[in-house]
Image (cartoon, rainbow, N blue to C red; front, top):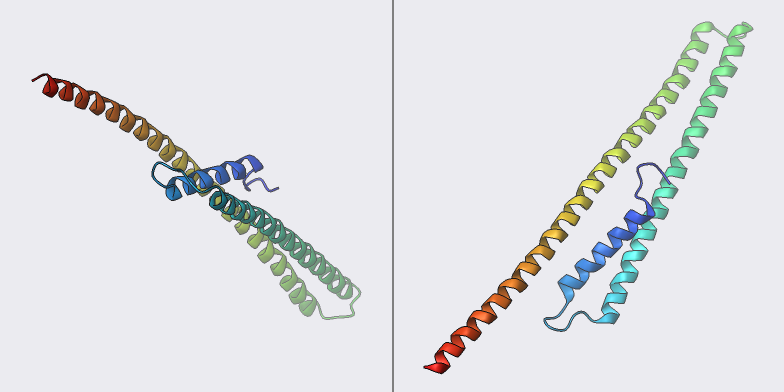
Length: 169
């Protein structure tokens, strides 16, 4: 697993947060959520996470194979044309141009590799920010729920006190 890919724990935490969100959005007042619907949502979320992981692994393998192929073929090209020029079998300018093109290919793909690495790092930072925002929002929601329950209890007490005062009159 890459350094900038989510860890299994992060993936699991993400799935748990998504399921918690599903439950909050789809529950019925005073009932909760249908268990079969929750299972269906859980299956789809876990399957999506597994697909994402497999796609990431496949993409990384494709890039690595391509880099190895280009690097190997470019070095072989440089070596062949360099030897041909060294033995005087070909014009030095032609051999130099071919070697230059092969070198540029190596540098271009090395630059692509570096760009991909930076892109993954930026995505990892963005994912971390989004996760931290979700955790903070979750904390705020739980705090607000607690405050609402406390207010409801206070209002029930106040209504009870007013009801007793009215009934005494």
